[in-house]
Length: 278
Image (tube, rainbow, N blue to C red; front, side, top):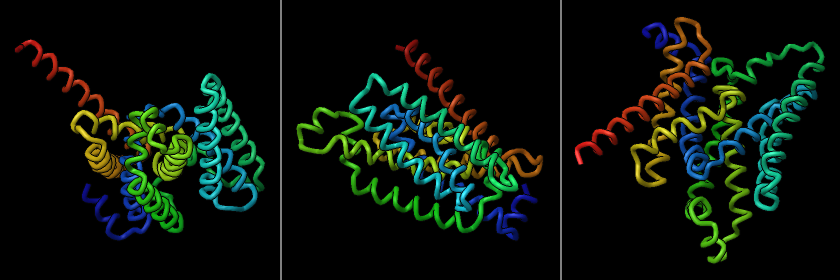
């Protein structure tokens, strides 16, 4: 642990990793709460895996893969959201198709990139220690945008999550609000890809919020606690993984998963003990 903090003090790559982890924690805490409450895990998974297609195309043409990820994530969110609202019976099919085609397109373009000097594994499983400073700035802007829009549309998102019919009767645009919510989730996915990669995005998006749900009673409280838990998971994952040279993203998810399982077990035991006393 001492070695980790020595590196953190002197090396920019570790400082970038910690900053990215904290940014990801805020985004996954806020938007992960909506994903858990609104049960959007499968939709979020479709968006996250489709993103590889945009990353591969951007890299092939010499662009920043993260820019390609942003564009693809937003397009996927709008397509999936529209189908989910208008043609609900085809929702699973469309998500599955985008999921598979996006991954396949990304792999093909990355494979055909001249020189093939990109590490596909870093996109799939994340490499938080290799995040460049320019991407840190980009993710700061995305984080700020997510928080700003959530603050501005908090009541609308709350209404859409819990009572769509009442929302529509109040004259609030359910379709536009729902699509905006999915677009913000899409931007969060792009941030989390830098931390844990495409494969593990859903775990980091949902586990802190799912754990926080046990201890909170309002959406706002859940967001705050989920963000704090996300920060603890990402930072402790970096610390634990450094000396044994383990993949940081996978370590973060293992810690988050263990925390969720332990919380679930303890809550279950507490409810059973309480039931017996009464």
